[in-house]
Image (cartoon, rainbow, N blue to C red):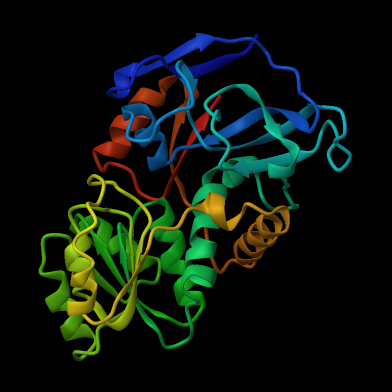
Length: 323
């Protein structure tokens, strides 16, 4: 018996259908994973609504999970039944069991639970490449982070503080402002404020070298105004809708700025990069420098309710779906 949440046509949370699906057999190079936990991420909403196109319909959405290997396909030598594993970036996670390319699976070390792993693989590895590779945060840097109370946001707040940065976080409510301060943010701004003016005040007019923005359309132009000359705008999400790229002349006018739209898949395309990224994440979590907060759990069959909570900004930290 195997069940999955599938989308037969794009739309709202009601389009998430819990149904019985065949139990797959691993093909060569694959492993069958019985999920113990599945991560909830905003990219799941994009696939549900059709903003991101699925290869075909119906589709099982979800990009992140953790569990136990039940079987391996031909040619898989570094995994065996019983291994605890996790992954991020492979569409199809909203299922009790699924096959995953073995080269995308990471073995979990002692001290990292499967529930923790499902809450942090996509979000935590995203935080890793953003802070260590897209822009390498150094001690003394001041950074601006939108949606700072979300899953990626709370990890980035803690990790950036661990790296010696001053963190300015933007959130939607006073309660979330208190939350990010409790996790180490130096300044908590509310999204209704004049963000560039507040950043100017905080930095004494210097502005910031990097803005991390997963909100998208509603914040893009204001984010550019927070950057110092030659600053880097990192647009890594579209929670408010996709960004329409303005006339590139705006980057010249605002100080020869850089803009990038990075993805985890690009940064972990090589197996060695995937393992190094995951290892860095495991180390900061096991050291206690970054704490993974699973603040909400839902049964996997109730994924629609989880999506309503996520889109309604009623979640903080990480959310996990339990098969």
